[in-house]
Amino acid sequence: MKNIYIIGVGLIGGSLAIDIKKNNPDMVIHGISRKDATLETALSLNLIDKKATLDDIEHADLVIVSIPVDATVTLLPTILDKISDNGLVVDAGSTKEDICLAVANHPKRRNFLAMHPIAGTEHSGPNAAIPGLFIGKTNIICEVEKTAFKLQEKALKLFADVGMRMRYMNPVAHDKHIAYMSHLSHISSFMLGKTVIDKEKNERDIFDMAGSGFASTVRLAKSSPEMWTPIFKQNKTNVIETLEEYIINLTHFKELMKQDDFDAIFNEMKDTNYIKDILNGMG
Image (cartoon, rainbow, N blue to C red; front, top):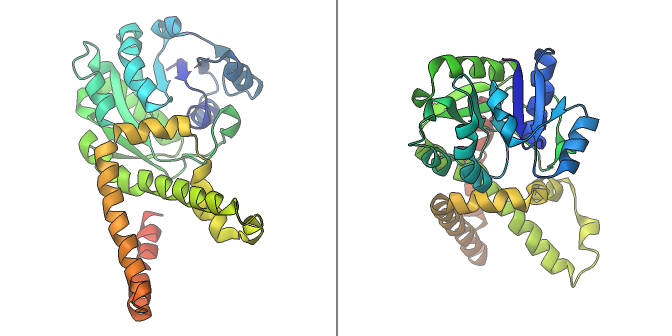
């Protein structure tokens, strides 16, 4: 691979650019964005070597699509129209079913690899890009059997070299599981932030009492609404299901509080401490 085109040079696209370039200095990284200012920033940060447009994609060995998932669904067929027979398009979206369906019958479906690198921070834009973001992170690959083997082989090596470990899953299962492991935590963080902000209108000094626990729990509320609203929309059914289960648990906790049943509360928290073992296993 020589020419890599990144559509959306933000946190994910920019971080990929840093590590790919580090491992492959001879590769030329091209940036594509709706906003020229984004590309100027990416150039100034040395995330990309050149600016490009969608019409240049015919020269790409690899196109990485890292834009909001609604835009990916709309734009992906056009990108595949333009890719050469020897080029590969990958996306980094946090939902997979709608994206895969958007190109299911495309004549160049073999030139597309659906993936979701589970990595990131609450920051966005080119300035958020950091080296080493993907070390030890899981990259979910969907419908790998529909991608030409020689094309996927090169791409998967490229992503393994930046530290990712590959896991294979169908799009429906991915969207269901990610609703629990990512989408619900973002909603919880947004709503915790909203609750505190609403309260702060009457109690101006509430933030003076905010410690590290609050900061870590509400961290995801700083995430981009432009990115997360389309994710919630595309994964609506699964997100609603996870919310209903979460609300049941919250309501149960509230009822235990009302009943002064703190032994039950202790036991529920103790049982939930098992999450430490699960997360240690993931590490």
